[in-house]
Image 1 (cartoon, rainbow, N blue to C red):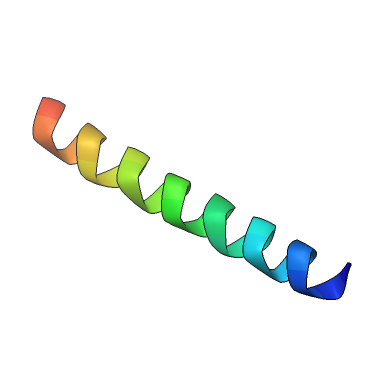
Image 2: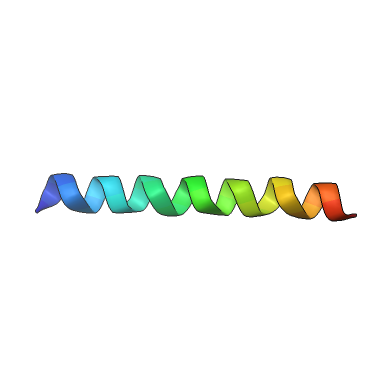
Length: 27
């Protein structure tokens, strides 16, 4: 379970980073 949570947290960080990059391109 702990490993799954770590992967989930990493996925959220990765998704947030992608959203930031996409916003930079739209501006």
